[in-house]
Image (tube, rainbow, N blue to C red; front, side, top):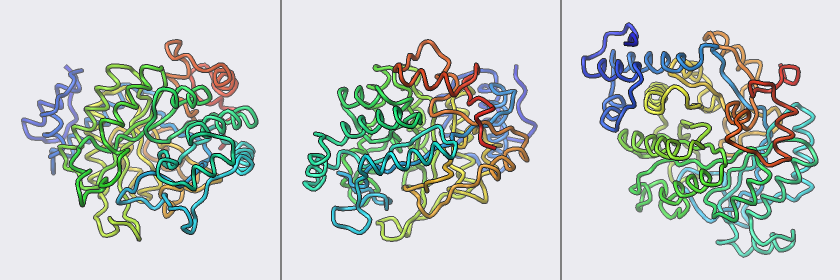
Length: 403
């Protein structure tokens, strides 16, 4: 039997940790118990998560992706209670990028050594705004997803950056068109609780955040063989039990299709001029608890990421709770979703990672195990570019890494 970390925990928690370290798959009741851990129990949970992560990664590598962030449009059909990214037509800052603007940013990102272009945008803004329909018509496209697909193809062809697109809920035709030019795609589950859609909740009036729609998009991606990023957003009013249920919904998706390449645990940040401007942000301890439980529920092989820019002072401790990826870091563009939180310099991130006993390595928009797997065939142009950038273990060739 695997040895548990040498931390004094209660018998109930210790038995659960012994089971998971011996290879057991934990259930919902286990998750509830671990998420409620405090004091010595919480210390044991965090230590076990770090040990479980280490069992799958004895090389002690932590990865990141050097990217450029392209906010194709900040118009959206929805209005989340915590979002400052989305604008209304005519509002200061409302903008849909032209192809020339997209290409200019992508070229500069490539010059600075980026390998990924992250397209982020509102969900089907043309369904809500006549102005977006007119913009799309002027550009020559019938829908926002069609425009995303075209921009993905253009950037890949003209700059060699590998596209990764987050654009919300998609149907089969939309996903096929975008996936044809993307290395991977993403949609945050955020939470499976329909309660958060009720009046006064963070997702009130936000149709695309319905959990069944987001899970359906993940399933569609699995059926089409598209590697996906998903994750949960914590601190928006969910219960600890709802965090567990959300993580298990992602685990079930991955067990069925094998297409979840990473799970992000993202902490809510309160922003002025939003409905949730006075809401409390999760503490570092709360993040550590959730990260550790995510590792224990999702298993040693899942890639678990937490954004370092959303907790600059406390993010280093995440490495002790079982994460193995920092996500995308840009030398050029800000985090348009959280503009108040600048990216750390890669050199600083490398120092933080090394101080905790890990080596920082650059990956592509596609995680190594998907980049090298014959079970996940890529579109020809994407596959060619992946082969040019990646070494035999699927990471960025060291001579191409930016130090």
